[in-house]
Amino acid sequence: MNKKGFVFIETIVVTCFLIVSLMVLYSLFVSSNNTELRRLRYDDTSKVYEAYYLYQYLDSYQLGNLIQNLDTGTKFEVIYPGRTDIFGSDTLKESILFENLWTELNVQRIYLLPGNISTILDCTSEYATICSNTNLVSYLNTLDDGENYYFIVEFANARDGSGCTDEDCVYSYAYFNINKGNSNISDEDNPCVQQGVDFVQCSIIDEVSSTECPSVSADGSVLVASEGGETGYICSAPDDYGTSYYYRGNVTNNYVSFAGYYWRIIRINGDGTIRMIYDGRLPHPNGEVSSDRSIAYSTFNSVNTDNAYVGYMYGTVGASNYTDAHANIHDSTIKTVIDNWYENQLSGTKYESYLADVVFCNDRTVVSGGGYSLSETNYRWNEGPWSPNPNYPNLKCAQKNDRFTVNDTSFGNGDLTYPIALITRDESVLAGYYNHLPYYDNYLYGGAGDDQIWTMSPGFVTRWYAYVHIALGGAIGATDTFAVKPVINLKAGSLKGGTGTMENPYRVE
Image (cartoon, rainbow, N blue to C red; front, side, top):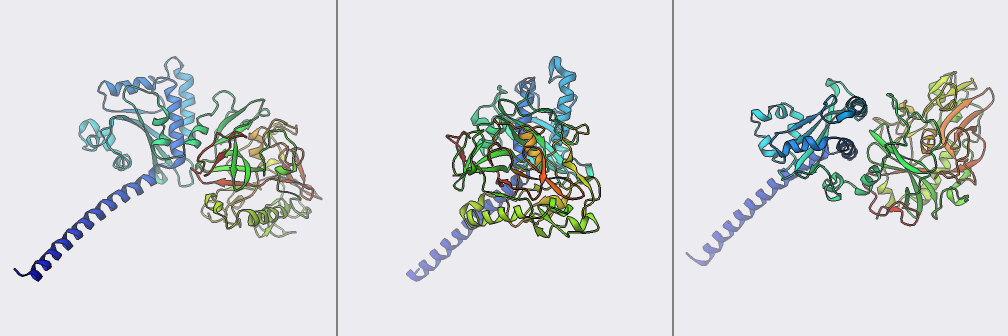
């Protein structure tokens, strides 16, 4: 064979080898990518947190006994309300609490499975119960075999995050590993570490108090009966996205350094995003009076002689109906102040990429009255928990028109220019403010030399004026001037370090 023929054959062989190699690599990539897409579909950040919380709750009782059953040959365990072998002597009391928690988190089932996932997926008769759940099987196909056990939580939600019926349920899952023979988990076993979810946020949620928090009613209202107290702690309540974890009381570990400013975490939203309020160019201890703790002093609106002016945005002044009065057409004075600050400080910077588009609630739910022109009207926050006809804080926003977002128009209204707004009266009460009393140890105190910082929660309208709430608790005329402390939301997983103290705040990079 001449030299040219040999080179030609060699070229063909090399080309075939490269094509086969590329095909194999592409196949591996597609398989890996499809698996990852399925994982992204299932392992929602907020569900990982909720699964971790459920594990810790059950492990404080007799979950270890069920794990030991796997050690001794039981193929799998299914946990559900009504099992009498989890709570010991506290069965009745704790079963009721567990059922309430189960319902609040929209849990369908909890599974304890051995690590040999491929064996389970062979679907022999002993695993028939598992394999009859096609959604679970799809999820198991995204998991790898391992030596340890899987604690898997199956959630069933409607698309808006609420409870569901069989017809409209969307199933999601979250897991973490448990070492064989050991029901306790170390930092390395933490589900946040295992699944790449931000460990800082998980460590925050791990601090949820089981003794100091107000109880939560079936509709999500938090039955607050006092101010936050002398210590700081974390509580939970449902919001529009899932379970929210909020800071309450004399909190000293919710500092964040972001974009050249200090912020204080209000709560971790139900989707894992982090809601925080401005607190200055410098860090300030609780109770310190400083104008640095707000961006400006402003009226809520420059005019207050109409129901429209309780809106963060508003519609037609002098309208003859509620809808026209509260259409989101015109910016309020305070929204203009906040948007201008955003344009000058955050717009176009690298920090914008950390911000999430999450609902801000300007709850204009009418309790009595017409809600337009100067008809006397009481909005939801006309009354508080301390009133004869109490209204309790609730982190769910009732009306789509009041759910301010930028781009989200499926759940929110899409009317914001930027992802920034104000705290609500619901959030300030949950933070620890109660009635109209000053609370000097609270992290919100000090924005204007006192408690008087604007919220975006309407109070009421008389025959002359419109009133909007400040954080202290009272509803104030919309043309009065008080401090402006903007609120933003960081994307889930943004916190990369720090301990949350004034000396060592959480940070994003």
